[in-house]
Image (cartoon, rainbow, N blue to C red; front, top):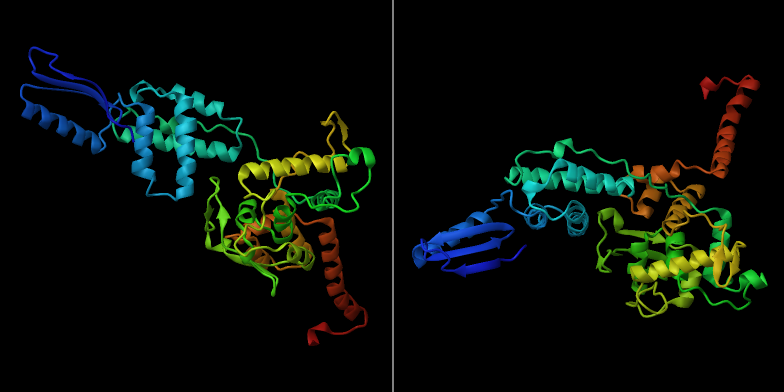
Length: 400
């Protein structure tokens, strides 16, 4: 909320003994009076009028945006979305349009700003568009605009986001080699694996995503106490937000228990430490977003080297063998695909993935691999075969 910005308070007129001009919450005011009592009453009345939400055309966009967020959104939406919305409005919309008085903003200014956002993803463009429409619709209803032009705004198309995918068998092979420490910077020269490797600093972080299907934010929040080594069950109850704070999952589905594969559980047993110590530390430090990005960039670099990319003066030389869309979230997607290949029912997979809606899981399950399709055909053929044999032998199936 904007603070009071006093410009002058003095006897500036022969007609009025007391006068004050200032900007209060973005609204310019000019109070004049003959007596001090009258002056104080008028000034307080003006403050009260503005505090009740009275906005005029002279109110600047940022002052109105701050008041709009505080009045209409702070108690109506969750903390995470309020932080995101505040960032969009105060760091994107206001600077993009310009912090000018509401009365000076034309539809052309707003549409030009929206058009400039077309390089963002469709999902992000939609968020900016909805926030902008709501902001100016509220500005009109509060008297800051003469007409409501929010309905005439056109949503830019934005860029289509690349669909997340499972990693290929070759990518999985090289990834595990990198995580185990077998592939190092000089692999492009030696072409040999390290005989006594030291695991990569992102080893456990990435394997929790690959072997247990955790979101990166959930992997970051893990502590050793979350793992029951007797039963081999991992309990997910927290996730890191963008500010590095540990919070409860966004929905009840985020609270879940996951069986840890034996191959990974054995490795965890050799790494376990203090129960309340982070399980996925990077270089012995908490897995902040910055450290995660640096760690993942290094993994991608080593995977390119392990897949045969040339290196000159410590720089990778294109073309790069590793696909551009190889991102950390693909490891979680791969876990879901592995569940499908293992024959895990989709309703169980939904619970293990922490999806609040089974349709989210089905979008991954419908990306069936040729291996799954082939095995499915074999099951169907085997099922249908008994009917074909029964017909060939003259058996009356209706009697069974």
